[in-house]
Length: 430
Image (cartoon, rainbow, N blue to C red; front, side, top):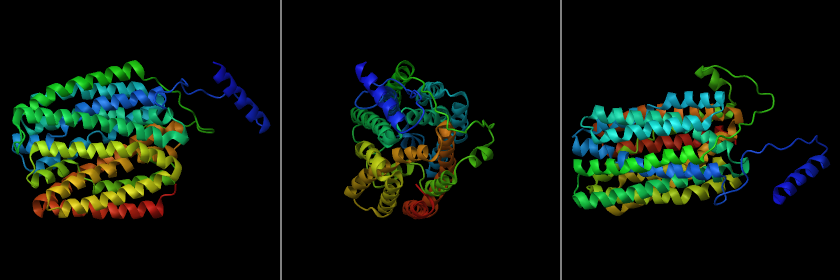
């Protein structure tokens, strides 16, 4: 209590000597921290940790389930990956806008995580690509409800000087959950089918049953330990436009609009990660080996995310994103030309480095570019642009794979990444 009193006294004296009229500072939540983070940041990280354990066990092997168990080709894999990744795009925009209107970020997050949790058990019964798409679509609808409001809540719960650190921690926890989920997946695969080259139905169904448990725990943690955060209103901002997409986009700063265009260009070459998994199997790797590589990918992702977030707080977000996109272009060129097993291992690790450098930092960059009361809408538009672009990206990737070669898919992605990198450097101001 004495610590808080001294802190408040310091703020009063500081305000007085600057000649400003003192106003009691708005407290954004409890001052106690867990591992150096506010409770909201910490527990949102736990929620993502548990959710990703579940999602990695159930959805990461969907391309192999479609190809090995159900017998579909890469075009169907591309359709399922593209539609499911894009399904939530408009919903993310709408839910982000709603969270700004009602200022209830947590409520929408709870709805989203709950929808995904309810959908996951139905993968146990899926026997056609349409059923897989339906379950995956429902899961992504849940993600559409939660993602924008959750990211806005993370931004609201952290100071501008620790925003990169907060998003980096969240990405680290999210991806650490993926590592644990994939380790469990590898154990189940090894116990049920050994080192078989193709995924079996019984193996996949066991993964679904186990994966339901952490998903339910995530919803419990969110409801019990995460709290709504008061949204600060910018000075002079009082307009509350209706849900008109063009008006919503027009209301933002030109920097944010250009960043969206550059992100769309990059994403057009960043097809579903289903194709990275299929590329590994194309090199005659077993399912067990692919899961081990995914563990390496997520471990490198998790280890880079927090340091990258902290570094972006010091050096600026744009530099980290430029570096990450450069790594991505190099990795995709590597996937196009890889001929040896050890090269695939290194590429998967490098792919994780790209994610660690960019994912959290890009989300923090969005918060830097927009006013606080519009963060939900901004994250909705950002995720919406990425999601909508993923559909044509995955369709193009599937077509290039079948019409030309697997290498063509990755050459295309590398070329667009290089183009987007140039656009970010020259046209987006930090």
